[in-house]
Length: 239
Image (cartoon, rainbow, N blue to C red; front, side, top):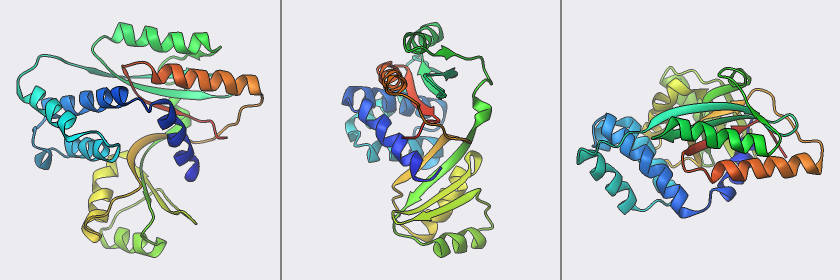
């Protein structure tokens, strides 16, 4: 795992760099979190986490406010979270998370991406068992001893802790995200992790064998990123 996760996120960001797509993505997430819970982020941890991620991705305060105001205004607009699993070029495996107001449209568009790049959409459970659902925190201003001391003091378990010249990466169970994040922030007020997310990370990583496979793989990523309903794309390929 480790920095390979960072490489994947950078590659994904390059194909999803259009601001309108980014704003739409966070707008839907913030709207649904505010609508399904308290619209005050201080009393809604899910909403607070999404807003913090949006700010790190340079989503404007106006976009955030409009999404919350829309939820408070009683809009009957509703989105459904759906997850698709698929097999791409070569040995690539994908998890595609969507937030959509039309499930039939979403699955048709996602399936088309796989079909046109030589892959196929799998059934539920066909890929997900090859991934772990983890809370991920990457930090540059703390040491392994700092992290371990915090975890011991708060009586918290983490799955893995990696250290390299770029910093520390913490992996925990997805369900422990808020607990771990709270412990870190309480120990270091004002802490801003380089990575602060819940993600599907592959148990075993793979590489692509040919230029043709890599070309189709990149095309698949690009096509998925162009779908408005797609929120996140995870895969098992490393450079």
